[in-house]
Length: 287
Image 1 (cartoon, helix red, strand yellow):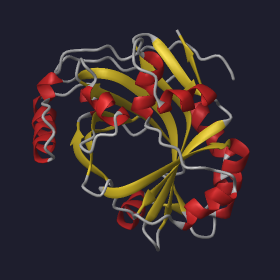
Image 2 (cartoon, one colour):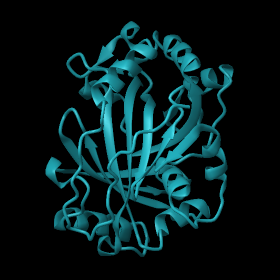
Image 3 (tube, rainbow, N blue to C red):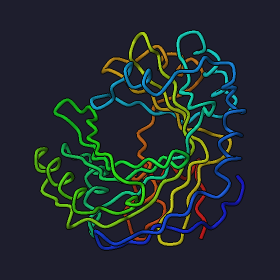
Image 4 (cartoon, rainbow, N blue to C red):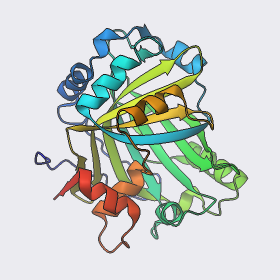
C-alpha cells in the first residue's frame, strides 16, 4: 500500500460556521486514471437525465463489495451490453466530497455500529468538478431499505448546515422518529473519492464504483488500498444481475459505511467493531 499524503481535515465546527474546503489534491489525474483502469471508454454513455429517470434512488437496497482493480475492470466489461456509464460532456468520473455531521457523542456512528433500527446519517455533498452541492439525510425504513432525502444547496455552503439546511434536516429526522436536531450536530469527518456511475436503463438499477477513497478527521487520513475499488449495487430487494456477476468474480457483500469506517479508524477510544476489523485489511491510516 502506498503512503497517504496528509490532507487538510474538516474541523469540528459549530452549526453555521464556515468550513474551508480545498479541492482534493490530484483530483483530475486520479479521475482520469480510474477511468483508464476500469476501461470506461468501451461503454456507451448516458446523460444525467437518463440515469436519473432509470434509477430513482430515494428508496433502495444497497449491496457493497470490495473488489481488486483487475476484477473490477472485468466486471465493467461484462456489463457493457446492459449498462451505460454516466457521461458528463465527455467526463466519465466525478470527484465527491462529503462532510458528515454527528453529535459530540457520535450518536449516528453508534446507532449504525449497534445495529439499531432507526439508523441515520446527515451530510453535505459536493460534486467537485460541477460545483454542485446537496444536503442529504439517509434513514432506514421498516424493511431495512435505505431512504435518501436530499436538498439542493449553494456550493459555498458545503461543509456546514445553515438555517435552511437545518430546517430540512430537522423535518426529516422528526418524521422518521429520530430524536436529534441539527443544532446538536457538528462536522465530524470528511470522505473523498472518485466515482463512476453505471446504469441499466431498461431495468432501473445502478452500479457505482468508488476509487481513491480517503477518510479525513482531526488531521489524520485513512485511505483505501489503491489496488481496490468499492462497488455498490443499488436497486430493489432482490439481487440484480450485477450482484450475481460480482459473486462469480469472487466478490462477497460487505457491510461497510464510509463514514462509519472513517470514524472507526481515525477516532481514538472507540470500541472495536466489525467495520474496523474489515477496514484494517484494506485501509491504511496516516497522521
